[in-house]
Image (cartoon, rainbow, N blue to C red):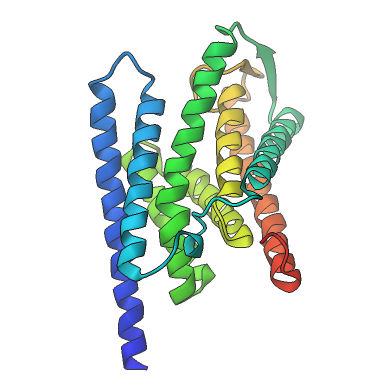
Length: 269
């Protein structure tokens, strides 16, 4: 029993070391992107970060004597289908959030001029590779190892806390980091645990971020401009955050039920 406990804590140490490596990778990728101003920063950071984080995952898996499939990194015949399902769910969640904001949040949207399909493709690719980097760094090796050794709920809470911390270090406010990134981390983590892979959470994560950007939720760019009823700005902000919490809670419950169904029927393998 003592040896088993020591092994679990050694596993935690390796996970924390892995996540420290991911931070170093992110810092290095960000520094490189500044030396390449002709390229979109999101694509440089996300692309380099994804490749380096995957390599780091392989290194730690070899250290542990595990396979890619053990932490959901193996590409299988159902991976593209699960990615597409995740993307559809992500866009549906964005639409639901917009409906809540329009219904009770005093917000309307107006189309804005945009540069065209090529510019949109660049934005979409940027969010895709950034989502890949984050899912590899948080819901791949760390979450699956912690879930195996400590259980899914402690694993989810620790990974979500570190995910929120990364967003705080990246400049996000405390509320946005804890409520926004924290709840998102729990949903993406549940998607990873429910499907035992990263295809669905990557699709979900990328679609949510792209949809959020499209309706002006990222604070810059987008396909639509949010117009708030004059005098209702504070109320609109509160309802936007509350609506987000409701949408994420619904997604979490849905994915939890998917995971329970998979465990009882053996589906989604």
